[in-house]
Image (tube, rainbow, N blue to C red):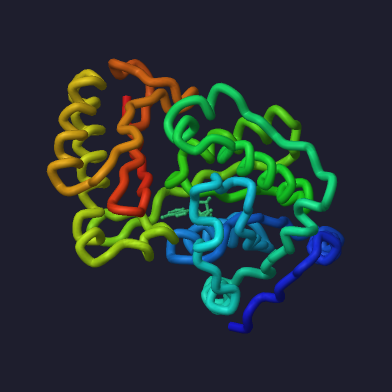
Amino acid sequence: MASPPIMRTIADLRSAVALWRRAEESVGLVPTMGALHDGHLSLVKRARQQCRRAVVSIFVNPTQFGPNEDFQLYPRDLDGDAAKLATVGADAIFAPQVAEMYPEGAVTAVTVSGLTEGLCGPFRPGHFQGVATIVTKLLLQCLPDAGFFGEKDYQQLQVIRQLARDLDIPVRIEGVPTFRESDGLALSSRNAYLTPAERAIAPTLHRVLRQAAADMEAGGTASATTDRGKRELFGAGFSRLDYLDVVDAVTLKKIERLERPARVAAAAWLGKTRLIDNLPVAF
Ligand code: AMP
């Protein structure tokens, strides 16, 4: 399959979408930061199942990186990404420039409170504001029928659901299950940073989350469940833990006992690499 056309400006994106709309074709948008892997491609496949056209945005968004994070280092490979997207039938790539997305003098940002106070929020100040702002802009630039987001970034997914509702953006937000390696490790562009030794330890994160979900489902308390999980993560060689929490699946507030569907979520470090993952806890 030929590589999808790459649109570099908002005007080009809008013209392409307008043509499809004239033909009464539905449009799905998959926002990404590139360095695409099979997890991203699973989102595109889902978009292609639900919509006639699938647009994939590729934009390494500077405002969602903290000053000490990996914005400069973040892997970029537009040609490789385009080749992968050709294999799943994406209709277009939207790869805008930073200068057009954040022109001189832009001072408006989107803040979603509550949902961003726990989990990754305190460890990545400003991150969710950066995400909420760029996703709002992308949704308004494209005006798709549906936007597709991974459950891998569950807090982000909930934030996006909330902002679409609160700002009356006429889009359906679809969550797509996490795509994993056969050993359980969730695919992530940041896995490329892991050394072979770290890569061998990394699947423990998923194993600990599975055990934690099972412990909660069997009637355990969050404190006992997370104490056990933390011991196992450090025992396996994780060097630092930002959090291992059990939270309400909708509000993301910490819970102690299971009274509604919940989520176990963790952010843990292997050397210089921060891994996140989460799983549902059935009620
Ligand atoms: P990113 O490029 O990392 O910002 O991710 C772009 C989109 O892909 C987000 O909606 C992520 O949640 C989603 N995503 C990343 N990794 C995975 C995965 N392993 N499985 C499913 N979705 C993913």
